[in-house]
Image (cartoon, rainbow, N blue to C red; front, side, top):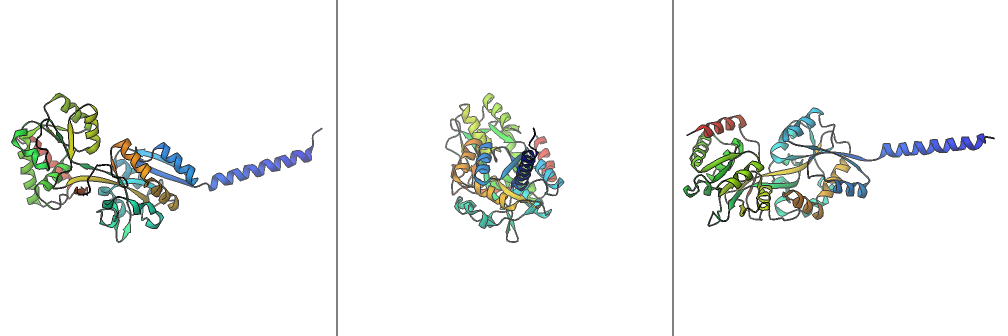
Length: 343
């Protein structure tokens, strides 16, 4: 015989449990992150979720254009937090796609390396007294040299023009960066905003470099293959420390410098979207990854420098020139094509 009273009590209990579980799931905190590979590793996410109870969903991206498309396409509503470099951040501020941070919610920012301590002094990370980017990792664009072929060790990019290295230089195939680093070599204070006269000066200098250039490369793998199969003494290292480590891994006798006139460098930041749904969760994540353990692991795994632990990516006295948007990308591209076509 069925005990209807007991069965009814069971149904009520089950319904209550189901309602409780639904309410718990509905109220669970979550965080949506858009980032480069290596910026939100699975073990870090698992530790953060365990520590905070916040569920994290990460989408990885492969280019600056993809970041812009995803953030602009949803007007910032599809993600809470994303990674972006200082050269790109201003366009998001202009488009009102980002939300400023409350630094009081990120206490670990107080323990970062000295060059990253005052965010207001980092070009591109703030506006009108508000902080929109929290520096996370970086790499310089310096000079790789073969220690068996280059003696004494170089101190600046001017060595690329030394006639004794004719046909032994690997150069990067990019107009924007080549104009910027050459402008620094010429002593031009702002390499990202050149006058017409400065453009011509840089163009002439780059044409003068051509006799020393064995080849232009676009990827780190391509540069490595050329190095292995040719007599290469110097490499303008667009991929920085990653490029050095890859070459050393195959047994190359190479070293790396940040030139005395200043090394171009990219700096990636954590930034909150204008559509952030959980500002507290986003700031907790940024504070979480700005700890010595995770920052150290970031550098070990990627080769990038981080903002918390000194890894040798840049000495305290090295001059790093953070990338900015240039005055006219199309003009630089056109001039670069003329330089490559010059005899």
